[in-house]
Image 1 (tube, rainbow, N blue to C red):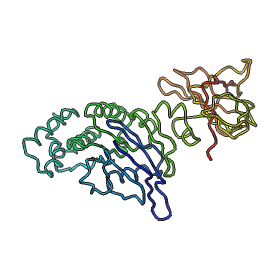
Image 2: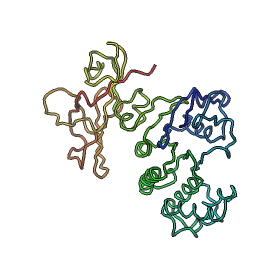
Image 3: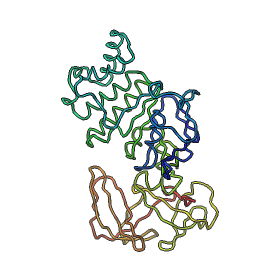
Image 4: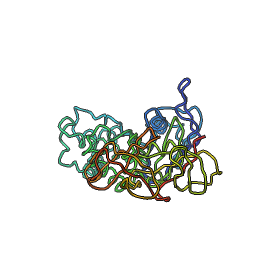
Length: 350
């Protein structure tokens, strides 16, 4: 439905977007993920009409978007701050855009009532924003965005102002709402967990370039580059060179097992990435291969324990995640190992 082709945007000597191309389907929940300053918000502003690219095209259902004024685009943008009118009630906030379009009172009343029911705020229609919780204000902003029935809804860091518990609840609410109304959602976020839980597909941005576009599980389990492997979730990365089909040769740790993501030439530089939950923790007395180290710290996160292990020759500790409360204590000598299929060998970024 939305096609972005070769979009570049520069601000002086800074290139915010460098030839970005993406295709987003009808009814898809799509996330633009990356650290601050990577270009994701600039792209959102170009789609909305608040920025003009230096080159490239943006089309919606085959029609050029760049030639249309922002208010003429079938797009709604939900701001990070929600931008609600404090002197208006919830119902008036939601109805404002429809009144500007000069719709009939009857249609405005009907559409506002429908969307209030959708977001579960019918009982709060007469309240003003200052009398609502953060989660409720976010629902009002969402309701105001979808009541105009846009083809595309853009969300700029929509959950960043909420505390962790409310944010988790609203992630479920956003997904439910998107499924119910059938509008294409494009969300900008720097929060990997938020993107993974919400999106059907994710585009990972780095310095104005899209490094990978994939479904959340594929992105997590098969990162294409060092940046994606390191940015999306926790990962233990080891540098070396491909020694054989399933082996990375390293100077400090010997041969490490993993599966290459694509065909690599023997001897070419590569990285091995193994996720914390894939690392097996054993007693130091255990026989066999694997890395040896000592436990630095054990943190319990209610259902999962994170264990940091210092391995000689490695600057960063190896992170291990185990279910439940771990019995291992700081200072314990342990071994670390993993199955070949549980680690990936990634080409070094060119």
